[in-house]
Image (tube, rainbow, N blue to C red; front, side, top):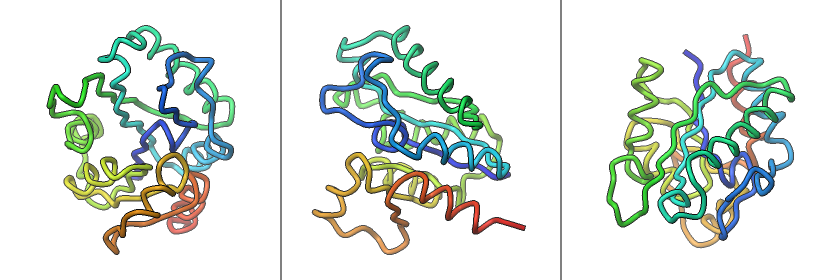
Length: 181
């Protein structure tokens, strides 16, 4: 199965230290809608795995989160792509749940949903916690320089097996070129 796992904030849409609290604040990073369309059209199934502690912080509720995701899904569909499913963690870091990245709970949910081994599946994120969670389950960790990615690269040396790209479009282009028949 061709599968790609994406973080949301900083990978698909612009992130904010103030959190994305409404559909109006959700703004796609240039090229990200095209990237998901490219992946979809190349036969990849796309899932989003995202920490959303703004829910636990009371900054927005689950209904608003659903509206934000509806906007994202609509934008992706209008570009010719599809996100099959979104897994999210609404908990605060101090709640110590199993689903908040860097713990791998969201990845286990994806593994169960897709009924597949995640070994080698590209998991794209913009933070250390995204990469760590994906590595635990055998995914191929992929860092994008959008969001927090460039700052992470400036302060840390990543393991050599991690892949680094400028943005999600560059990831999609590399992944689809690699698997062309």
